[in-house]
Length: 86
Length: 417
Ligand SMILES: Cc1cc2nc3c(=O)[nH]c(=O)nc-3n(C[C@H](O)[C@H](O)[C@H](O)COP(=O)(O)OP(=O)(O)OC[C@H]3O[C@@H](n4cnc5c(N)ncnc54)[C@H](O)[C@@H]3O)c2cc1C
Ligand SMILES: [Zn+2]
Image (tube, rainbow over all chains, first blue to last red; front, side):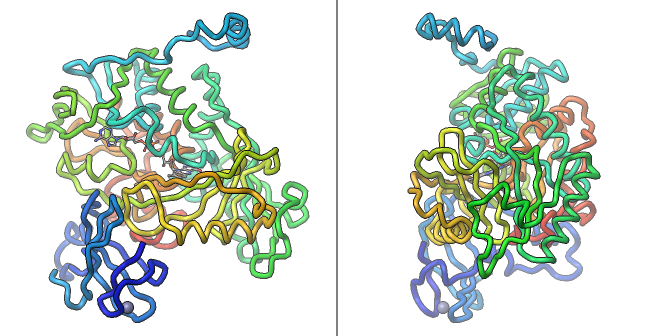
């Protein structure tokens, strides 16, 4: 599997560290309540098909939001987490 | 039909013409008392114990493919009770006791082989941790024995004991640990459930769950609607999709775990050997293949196949631990979809919908749990009460933070197990 780093281009999967669902970018406010925090920390849509997840490019330090298919492992592009629309 | 030595002999003399199918292939009825979604190990054992322990026989198992075509037929078959935390410990202890009586109970040869499991350690700190684990296992009433390097050498002379990075200091021996024939476990439970009247319906995918006013009414399937008073979701890696049919989002991510097997060899590895520091474990199947595996690929996936980095890692670890393995040729590799929870422990619980139950989150360790999970889930579905050994497997422990069971002590977060 090769992934797209928005800074460096297409690179081997070995150069990346996986974080998980891009939901991690939508941090709830402190007082959002335990249901919102439970959804943020634990509950997942866990799609069979298109997903957006966070990968860290160890080589350059870019956090990327990668659009990927969990059934075929096809990669459909990525954007820097700082530019990602929430 | 009962299996016996006499029957095998008689069939041998009669040209094997007297064997009959092991279970029926029934059409789904319009309604059942209970429906189990998923014909893997856990679904089939749940149906078996619902019928055997609770007398519920007007029930069906709905399987979208064929029985045993999921993880139950894809795993590396290790059966053990070496858990540490209260909540897990008593559950796996109960499950191992069921394993020990399983062949007699099912009248089926599941090739359960208690050949002994050895977990290796490579430092003083690790020795202390394993001594502590061993004590926890013995407190639970199970067996554990701490071996020094010479003790390990007597069992496993072929390991590289002087490896520079991971010299072997010793191992924790769990004599009652071992392996079983994975498909046979699914087939044995299927046959046992069918003979008690359970309908096993294959090629029947559940596509919807009918709920009215918070009460489950039945399911929609590719073979039509089926009504039921109780429904149990037991679909392992597919738990997220099926739970979504009931409007639920689960604390589960599906990941791929790979396994490997070599060409058949003469007997050379007599135990199950676990090399935790290299995320590597191995045993030899009765057919002669060396069966081994490692860690998750570590990205969410439904592909049932993995990528090269983890394959390389596993081969590296194998060569580090037992250089002799370099002479064997790998025959096949494959992957399965693991239902990973944040704390690495499973879920057996009711849902907010009355009559709807869920059994999931077995991560990469659910094969050994097949008897215990079916027994405890059947108890919950039949009586509405949690079965004591599985009472800790609550769905709400993540939200409340109470009763998390993080066996590895790495934290309760999705990418840590
Ligand atoms: C490579 C690998 C190695 C492993 N090694 C070990 C090990 O050594 N020891 C151990 O204890 N565990 C091990 N495991 C884990 C173990 O295999 C699983 O935890 C366990 O098998 C999961 O439960 P199951 O048998 O019920 O799952 P499955 O066999 O996957 O059953 C789920 C069933 O549900 C069906 N299903 C899904 N969706 C639907 C639907 N909508 N309608 C109808 N049916 C549906 C599927 O087709 C499937 O047959 C391993 C797993 C893998 C992949
Ligand atoms: Zn980069």
